[in-house]
Image (cartoon, rainbow, N blue to C red; front, side, top):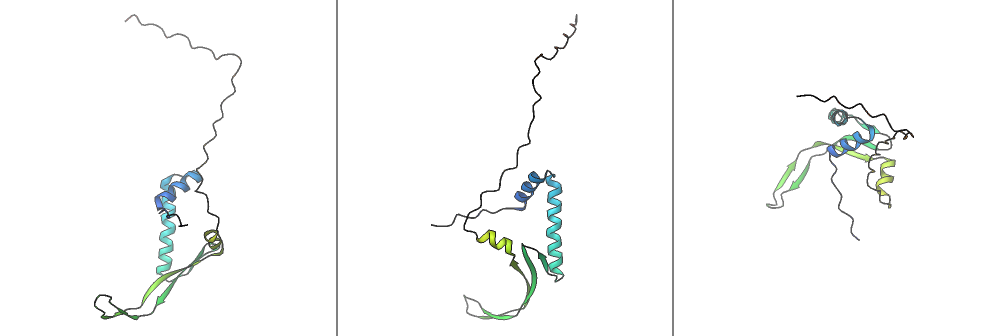
Length: 135
């Protein structure tokens, strides 16, 4: 049995979900999410390690220079060393992602409960008729 095709979830989709679940506006949620992403990138650019317990760890590693080969021409090419971002999966994420039980789709936000006023036994008073205009 083949695995189902994974869907691409964009930042916009996440913003919409978080906004619906928290009651915050999409503008506020988008700004907060963007600030988080910017901070992660800035810290990694400084060479810092970011650890999110149960989620995972981001860190920058230096990849050594090496010899590579162009597959078309078979020419040897020097690939310079460079910094790369590595991610180590946290325990909770590993457990959720590797679980054999497929997760259900994200639940839809609960509809706000509308409470109707109880009907009284006497009908509400009718408004007086509007005065008629002679014109």
